[in-house]
Amino acid sequence: MFEALADLLVYRWIGFDPASHTGSALHFFVMDVTKIFVMLGLVIYTMGLLRAMLSPERVREYVRNRPDWQARGMAVTLGAATPFCSCSSVPLFIGFVEAGIPLGVTFSFLIASPMINEVAAVILVGILGWKLALLYVVAGLLVAWFGGIVMQSFKPERWVEAYVWKIQMGQTLLPEQDRSLKGRHRYAIAEVKEIVGRIWKWVLIGIGIGALFHGFVPEKWVSEHLASGNWFDVPTAVVLGIPLYSNATGVIPVAEAMLTKGVAIGTTLALMMSVAALSLPEMLILRKVIKWQALALFVIVLAIAFVLVGWIFNAVTY
Image (cartoon, rainbow, N blue to C red; front, side, top):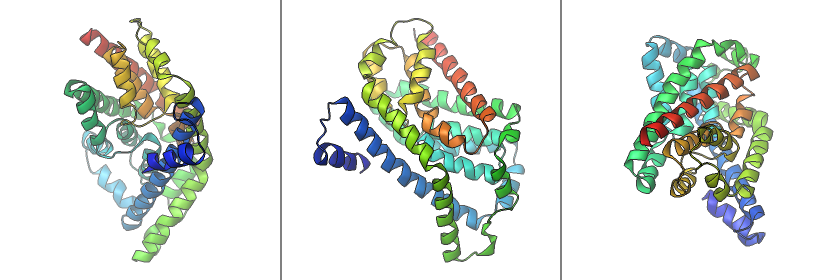
């Protein structure tokens, strides 16, 4: 639907050539702006309804009564089962933080959600084979599990923005006042307006940067510069993946092209993970929730994990 809308607007109405750099970049921008804002609205509204029916205190107590491994397993499983890109995962992340779920567990969800989903897994099997699909899913689960543990060891709660704790402590509007269907609906709509109103500029900036890279950095150039067989291919892939911004499904054609050009499996996996989980729009949105220290730690932990995954798989499959 979103791609068809972008086709109609950019190629048929405005008249850009699909093969042109400008047309490709503008098409990407229109498609992702509509898709992300629709998904943001739906996800935030759904979370608003859930929060209106279940108080943050009950959610917090529910998680606290479970062992860390069980809570983390639930977060990783939920992340893998939700077909969201990194930007649309952030509202859920915000809801988890505001509900008092430990940040280490919440970060495990945030890592797993954009990297792994059943749609991407099925497409991966069909295009690249079940072995690469399995490697990608297993690697993503491991990164989400241990990445959250590493984040938790640094006690990142001290780097959460103050307004989040105010919501958690009940200093802002809470849903207990009106439990009726209309009341829950009004609360969810208010959540959409408040969160989208706070982050829409950052989303547009991030997508714009991603669109420029998508349209003006040739896929052939990326493939050719990542197939040298040197140790720095994997770190280069991780760095290149950050501004290329897509979801786990959208990056699959790029991975296919890389493999056909002779790029190693580990290097390809590292790029896919970086594109899905370290996008610029996600960083810009997350900055509204956590301070730069936690954001920098999140980027460093994931970047190191993706590099290690790439090197290990390159060594095993060489």
